[in-house]
Image (cartoon, rainbow, N blue to C red):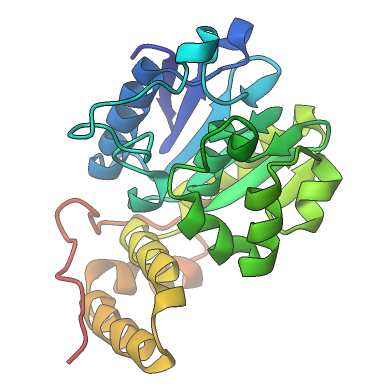
Length: 269
């Protein structure tokens, strides 16, 4: 994979944006590699949790602007998408943690906003700065950010294009955790390994999808989906294994497959 490293161990896939000398600025090749990696993580049952991080001292300093005036040149209207990656993190049926080890600017931060959790470096600089570059925010952030912080705080971040310190962006609700940079990746990996070892993959996958859907649903619609999904899980092998493993004080041996046991999604009557 170009501009990206993929490593898998003990159910945890670590995806590392890999242009450290350029502060991991985003390239089309990186986007294609990240899409490919996310697709693999979604389909591969040996992957239970995904950690996205950056090589060196930055997470991702935004779009590669080395060509300056040509950075945001006119694109083919048939093929261009502002999504950056066609398979965003919130569509991966595994938890995705952004281990933001340093600066996350522009597209770097909007990619992190797609993740389920964001562990941010205290020393980093953060901002969705696109309005200060003559374009506008991207990568679904008009959808992800209001879900995370509310409309008013999202407006402050997106409309100003300001760059924030770690404590400032955490105060706005963007960070799941704010940590010294050296602790970001180890903390994310510890969380990932715990979930990979102890949480039923199919249960986690169904919960993740409903979490992302829930802001657009009524309480009654959520109850309808929760009930339908309980009928998928109850009585299955993992619903037996979970209580038995807990009573026997041993690690669970999960059998449910995200790839093969994924149900029809319960809709509204």
